[in-house]
Length: 468
Image (tube, rainbow, N blue to C red; front, top):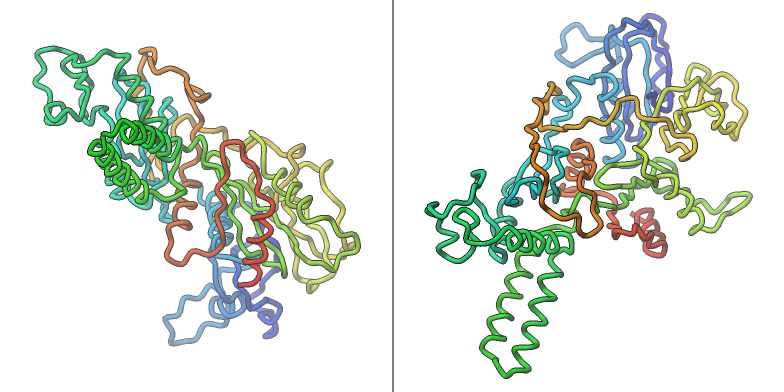
């Protein structure tokens, strides 16, 4: 992956006007020591003012100064102007993953997000908080803002169901003493064969329906029960049910709209683009970030295209069941809009057969834009999807998970596959970090299971983003 612009740097012959060619705008940049293959990794960071930051790092070092200086290290500068903090964080993530494949999680302080796990391969499934994301046939719900938030939501919503909360691997035995939940009639007590396997699986199905439907399945059932009680003139019973409905609503208010089944976590992240009158789109597909793709709202174009058609084409480029393509380095293309020493890199497409000719014939510079390739031109990811993704924030090799040879007894209901793919937890971590931030910029549009695109709402949000 290469950033959009590139310029050589010579600390011995660099004129004083060198820094004037850089924009005073937010950007992501990389300082490379040399162009040799054995060079050390670059210095990667982001800044709110590119010209001022490079002036501090690359200006001649004073004799008595503790200021961090890289003038003796840098030989080439690459940079790309960004329009939002989310775009900058995404570029920094991709760059660190490329140049620091073992330390990028530690460098970015990424940690697995807080999730709820429903382990369906267990004979008696239970729902519990976790930060370990494994492809083991389980259902994962989240991400939550913190582990404490996930624990609090799980503890409160499980009061409406009777599945177990114990940690042991159960082997039903009538001599088992049970626990306090079974004595309080808050658990079906499979530990001492207090229920049949089918009864317990039916209760687990109610839990899955509750989580998949954002609690609406339980609310509908309680509302119908309350109506029947009122029609039968059992007003005291109807009042109790009404109180329970209010309690369910109180529990659901603790969960954000982002926390849902990862198999159905579809959304659009909208950010202000670096270009004037532009909006940047990221697509979340089953918790996996795809993009970005740029939508220009400039009306002064020779052949205008309807905005809804532009949105449709743009989002189609981010759709599909194949994994997202990370930008790859491509040959340099000249650009007439930059100084002769500056080059830009275009990582929009991978195969040469899919490349589009530049809109302006260049001369001695290259254009590099880390946008999205068409679906027909996408290349398979350079790294095969791992079977296990763990909570190792330092990039160390995880231990293989424990696997079970027992046949899962949970039925394939609700149209879900038995072994759903799990998204990279780094994508969930970046998404949760942005969404739960106190200084969040941009908009999040959640999509339903059919991924229906609300074009009217998107156009309205585009106008709102550009008006800020």
